Image 1: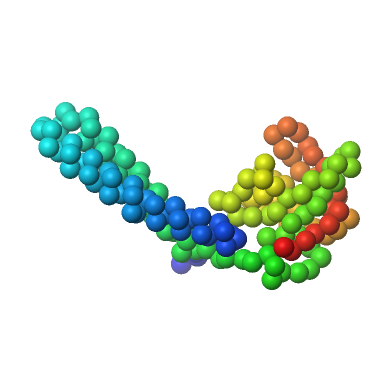
Image 2 (image 1 turned 90 degrees about the horizontal axis):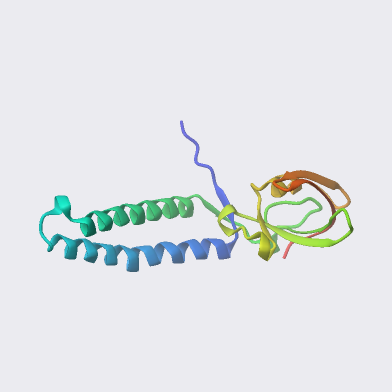
Length: 159
């Protein structure tokens, strides 16, 4: 019996996915259907590049809709403000100190919401996996593409 894994995400990530699938269904899908109809009017379908390109785009759109619908159906929306504790969990904002005591702040989010430049890292990323379950004062080591990195957890917030 197959198990369905839940996908943790914040409310804004869930809303972003809903908006994306809504756009695909109401804008992209009708546009590609119109393109297919127009290309059909150009005659022989076996040598009609516009028709084949539109059909390929239709397949891509349908696959994207199916993927997003699947993620939405498995979503487990988490509000960090309802969380508490002394360990790093999904949704927590973690204040770190690097080897030079430079402060860095990351929020642990879902894979679709991750944006390291905006201070949001996925729970499945190397740093995210290294942080989950750790407490204030603990040192964290993880392997990044640029080499091994070391951080100390200075503070954990749930905002």
